[in-house]
Image 1: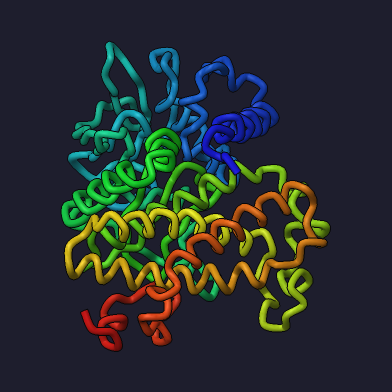
Image 2: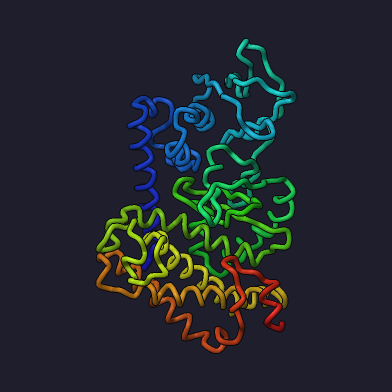
Amino acid sequence: MDFFTQYHNHHLKVIDTLKKILYQKDGTIFDKLDFYDDTIFSEPLLFSCINSKYDEWIDVLIFSLSKNRETLNTTYTTAIDEQIIYLPNLGYIKLNKKYPKKVQLKYISDSIHLSDEDNKLLEFRLKPLTKNKEGIEFLKCNHPLLKPLYVNEQGKITDIIISEDLYIKHIEHFNNALEVISQVYPEYYNLVKTYIKKVVFYQGEANSFATIQAHGIAFFNVKDDYNEVFFLDNIMHQCAHVFFNALTLDKKELFNMPHTSDLSFFTKEESDKGFVLYDRFHGLFTQTNINICMERCINEKIFDEDKHFELLGRFTSNMNRFSAAINKFNHKKKYKKEGLAWYTFFNKTYEEIQNRNKSLLFKYDISNQPYVFNYKKFKDVNKL
């Protein structure tokens, strides 16, 4: 299945859906934002805004994204941690003093002006955005629109930490991993550099993730000792969720039952109760792409000794999950045409990789692995 050449059309469908929702909420929205500029409507915070706090955030986002800012004047109700106001496309505003409850934003003579409710100008510093050579932005604040998305394994919103130190420690690891992907899986790399707009590094209970509620962002829960191999695995994983959300926007074409059905209705397995069918189907797409990339890295000996050993562990663990998921979703009569085409593609990829790597995949013990791969635990039971 050549989803690479098809992807842009699916991306445009996502953008068109966003535009329709925005227009339903405000019939004058396209007087403020250029209807034909799809880069504007690829801003992930617009998706977060329509899902939760439209009235509270839309004016600030319009101010940030519009090319006619001098015609706009917006009020920002301050409630952001560390006295930072994040403006997409523009940067981070850090006020020199504790700011008032409401801030007026204006754009005069190519510069931002801030004032309080009495029209008194406020002093501030504008910190620039941080982007890599692909143009992917490293988002360095816990934006209020994104806070509800950090959910732990019990389904509860949880606090997370974002710090400058995390980025200093890991930006090079991220960029190196992306460079590896460009070498071994260039088609996938092209999707990442074109359609992933921002990434977030954080620490907390919530596992790494991506969601249609912030379409275009990949979220990485990073630990201090993580390296390029972690990011290789997780760039492939979280970006795949972004892509599959767009590729399967019309979910009713996948299964012969509602995509929101309990997974147990599809598999007839008691242990699958409480899981959503469509959400678990995502795992087949992520594992397909993760394992294509990892197999190529192993064959081309991209990494040296310790990192190569970690890659072998992650590959073995991922292929084990791929196997379990392929078997779980092997119910061909329960798919519609599009869903069956996807499953056939996933199954074919699994069988090809499995057949090429049989001896390797039975070589290592991964029985002690938690949900998130732990390299230390892998080394405890396997020798380099």
